[in-house]
Length: 383
Image (cartoon, rainbow, N blue to C red):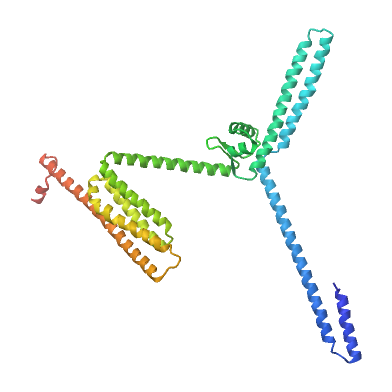
């Protein structure tokens, strides 16, 4: 690559030669060639500088990410080196104490001293205990490192996964984890032995507790619903229960079709139909005398709704939405709107019948109370 001084010299020489020879034909081409070379040189320099900056930024980002992960690991895990160092110290102490005591005992035994046995026993027991404890600490440190490598920076890990990755039993892993938690090797973790989850942070533990509470609440609600359903079923005849089950089956088909249709407007209509029909069936379950009025609903309206919905889904799945298909879908939407209104009117009429029955019961009650002299007769009020 030519230097800037060399380029300037080329232009100066070309200009001087042109003046001397009075021939300026090559001067323009020389200037253009030198300018082009200069621009190319500058462009390469900028590109190289940009590449250098980008590589530097990427390297910096990698370094920062590595530091972040290292800091998180320090927050979550204790040093296995400390645990292993403590184990090695115990082994060394056991050997340092046990061997001299045993040696002294053996020497005493050779000279037939009666106190030799206690020295041998003390050396073997005390030294052996230290070596055994140290070996267990070293082993636990190794297992801890393996668990740490499996879990990494995840928020949680199942005990089953740790067992599979280390060819251990679930019971052994739980036992090891409990020891590690007691020794503070997992700094923030908690073990949920019911679900078999090792939760690595306080945030993960809190989130898990919320999920468990929500699951328990859902189970209680489901139990209440099942209990209420059982009570309702107990007060219904087999034929009445069969009719209600037919209605629920239609609701399930409507919900399935609704889930498969992306159009929001028709989806809202189907949501409304599902809600109203469910309310009708609930009202009938609480007032079995109303079930006899549901023949038209179960034999015509609901089957028609499901059939229209199936037709709409078939039309909507066609790859080419022709004018006829679009018109047919629009007509089905209008029909479903009409059915929605009809279902709402049916629900209203059912509750109107219930209200009429309640009103009649209250009138009879007041009349009986008046005849018994327990309240004023409504006929006395009229007079």
